[in-house]
Image 1: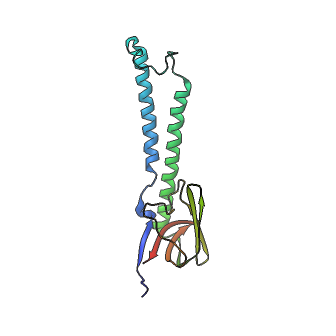
Image 2 (image 1 turned 90 degrees about the vertical axis):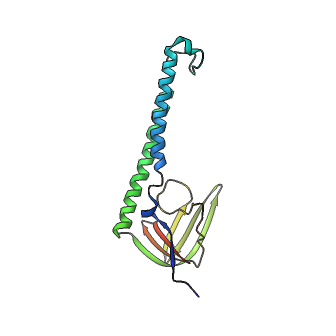
Length: 173
């Protein structure tokens, strides 16, 4: 007997902000970097402490590359986190507002292509093509969770999507 019961395996509006750690790491990297620079400057200003710890022994001046590294790391991590955050908000709004496209049916043409340590999966449902890698910054479904969803030809699914990105996926039991 075929069940008509579907299980939600991915719902962007319920997952929250996936890459929030990038914003957090950007702030920690920046604040931590400036704190380390402050400690080094304090040590350099006290002749007795200089012999204990001075990573820049040859000079009293802080190398510019250290400051550039901290600034660049902070900016890059914060920008990546911000892009991910705004993408999440945009796609969640589309899903909640009902503007996402919908298709239901049987998975066809399922393929899994492996690249060294990564893979890309693709399939069609009623002629609509979906593809996604298991790597990269993306808020949409990418089947990289520890409990992989067993997608294969013949599996009945319901898919809510926007511009080819899976926003919600339900699989028939």
